[in-house]
Length: 114
Length: 110
Image (cartoon, rainbow over the protein chains, first blue to last red):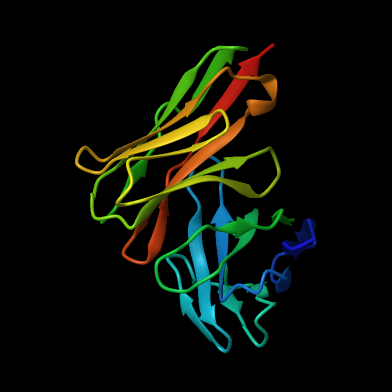
């Protein structure tokens, strides 16, 4: 079945550690996105990529990094520079770049900093 | 700067009722307006996408409308069921980015 797979579902991190969240899609979508969701707030865009080997910062990119070496994969690294990393992270994709078409989401990864 | 608001933040209704969820946006220059459903601890599922040239879209018991001049979209759910309980989020595609509302948490009481 086509879809987006995020892993791990739950992740615990000690302060000062970097962690990488995986996002893989088999929908043959060009565009991929990373969002952060906090209680009572709308989704906030961290990074997005419209094509392989290219990505752009979203509204809250500080303390995060990404790569897009393959069309199917868009991993997110939460670095020790992110001051408040505990959150629910959502990866999404859409068929084309430019104006956003229908978005497809993964099941999310919940990161907790101990 | 585009802002998207969803009021109320939570809503509880008895099973079988028809209901309307609201989504307001401040800038009418949108490309599309999307509605999503999110179950607790899960990702989002796309429900309906309304292009800026459209007035409404329907899928089963769901109907979404768009009025750009007033900066409003509504999601109408007919004959609500307990399985409709979830958080419903709207997002406006504005200037090549999706701007999100904080969502309305809907509880359908059996």
